[in-house]
Image (tube, rainbow over all chains, first blue to last red; front, side, top):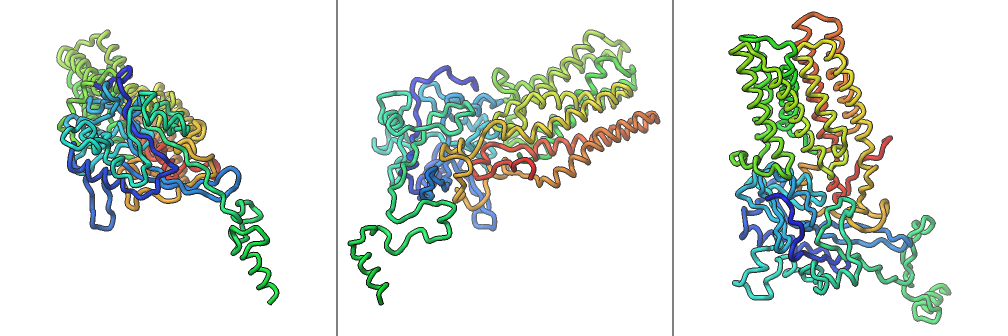
Length: 257
Length: 296
């Protein structure tokens, strides 16, 4: 039924640390691997070895360049994006067939592929691009939060987390109950100021993102201002502002020759 | 948004068909017997043809009947019910008119009301999309309903009403475009709100998540060049409003009515193509695309 549950017992979801993510795309690959072999239709590739390859993925990593407000050097932020398992999930209520649903017990948003007619309306309703229509099966694919792993007693306990979390070499992805204020993920969100994506859409995402920390300032790296852009960002003596240092002495010695 | 031909044909034909059925329901220019048979055949073939066309964009059309189950929350499901219920009631009404030369007035009024309700429900499939600011306005249902009624007025030969509706529809169309161009900026969506990083102008896409295309870019990445859009808008207004008004105003009986409807239909198809092609989806922000600022 495409009516959303009033509330869910638990709010299982991901916390993604934008400070730690190194943009290796391992989560993308492990997600595709697990989800193409298990629950539902495989995540197909089209024209995989041709001129215009494309395919279905449930997780994608964008990379952004940010210029901090204080004009210090630009930062690169790697930004993994998958279904946020929203509390007010617009993708669920638009579904005409009842294929899209949000589970009352743990808040996971799923697609019953046997009932999906492939109209694409749920993908239209999602602001985050979390849903992709599979070109081969004609059904909507989305992150299942690895529902076939997290409760799977055939797997060793350490593997009962989503594939993306299990594989992340940087520890940038955290999985847990965001409805429980005592849980590790909730505390992480509280400590680090976790935020929602596009809060103005009113979707109330369960998944949270942790902001990147300001980077350490490298001595000699000048702030990017309009007047300094034509000069080199770092001089050979970067890191040695002290006039007594070896490089300062070398600099003076070379000047005299 | 990708302007899928099946969806354009669906909204244009079923809209015009329900608009015509509404006028037949009101008994305007409705004959009995054989003439009425052809009138209803035209109306039903447009509505049913449009509805069948809508199934062509489905990935699994064999399960289409399931679309009747979620009317509590889904406008698409409500559309399925509204269309079928309206066609059934209109069918009974048509049997009375064609075979018994009897027009059940109240039933006719009911048909007209249900036709307008069905077009409204169809429009809500698009108007409900908060992710597409251009559609997410009260103008969308007004535009769809006005377009349906205008087609109905032309087809049922209501000269004065048709001219009035054509002029009103032209104004509504212009309002949709003018307001639509401002909607995205008004709603305050930006790459900064999408990512929660930085402020607009200080964040840009450094590297895309994939080097090939994908469903999101094919479905939501459609962009129409602004200068092409301008030409199409001129063509649209001329075909949708100006020529039909002149043809009906100058008179000329059935031939000018058929010509007026043909031009109007071309205009509405261009209008509906632009309705999709110009619509910007907020997911584009993640790919570093934002609607071009006004004046560029």
